[in-house]
Image (cartoon, rainbow, N blue to C red):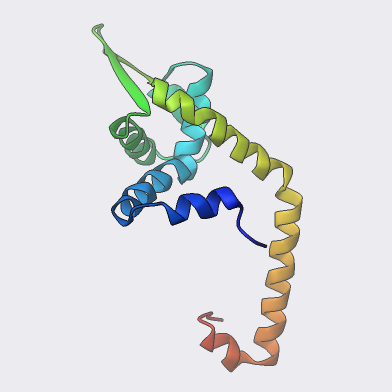
Length: 146
């Protein structure tokens, strides 16, 4: 499969000093927890505990780290309300809202292709298992362990 002309054009004109910065941004927005947080906050501002309950499987520490990273990158705004006990809400900034459409599109793509991806993984795993049975030494040389 050949890359699109747009991707080739962007890559060809990308100054080398921008590559690490772009990689950092893509790493942040590509994290599974960041994607889920962005999708949740696109609906409305949420408190920490609401996000934790809504995002199954995320630990308190991971949610804290993800929110801090998103806040540092200017995608999420943290507001502390002066009440007792203090109330903290998180919401998307305008920059964060601009990211919601591409993140949602990626999520929809993943959802619509889950069956194909599962089938490809199963076929790959069967092939790897067969190759490991036939030639265990070859399998080890490829960097896989038993």
